[in-house]
Image 1: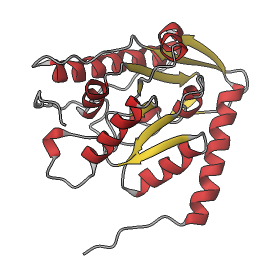
Image 2 (image 1 turned 60 degrees about the vertical axis):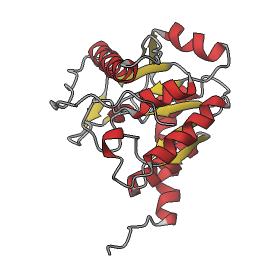
Image 3 (image 1 turned 30 degrees about the horizontal axis):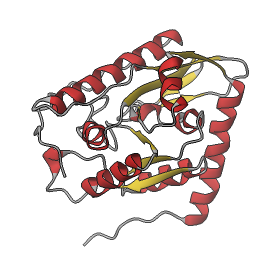
Amino acid sequence: MARKKTVNPILLFILTHLGAAYIRLCWAVTRWDHVGQGNHEALYRDSKPFVYAFWHSRILLIPPISKAHNMPTAAIASEHRDGEWIAELVGRFGVETRRGSSFNPRKQDKNKKGATALKALVRDARSGTVIGMAPDGPKGPRQRAKAGIAQLARLADVPVLPVAFNTRFSKTFDSWDRFVLPLPIPFARGTIVYGTPIRVGRGEDALEKGRLDIESALNDVTETADRLCGHQSEPPEPVALQPVATKAQP
């Protein structure tokens, strides 16, 4: 049996502190324009929980965005080594993590603890915690939403807020998610786009409709953020996802 690779704790400590400092620097020196900010404010003004939805490529600046309110925040991080890095990094911003891959009803045979993580996030949301989730994580397909986020929104009865960012000066990596790294250029422009909150209904086809609505809205806000910052948006990965079962998990 292959041994699970571990992360050097000293290296983890140093690099995540440096990463958090880099994120704070980018946040501080960039002149941010907020599109659809009223959608964001309307949710946290009432101190009611909701779900931040963002593509995996835009995960870097979500921690400071989530600090616009004083509500507790939790996110999902995979069981893999990259999940360990993400959990430690977002923890520098006070974000708690639940370990496990994004829940996908079509892959229940795989031991990724997705269902366990989903149930933990549902409990968090019901107790007043704001949730952050990249529905195409941890390994894609790129910009295609898995069903877990729709499951979460329906079971916890909370809205989903699509959000994306980009900056005038950024680097897009040739990774599976086309990861976007903002560059800390003083006074450069950046844009954060908030979509219209999405509710997932309880009808027979509501789960799949909710998943598709979230996916479409996320691609819309991402394209808008890219365009306003002078970038060509990456298209979603060209795959055909089959509809999932409409019955919510207990």
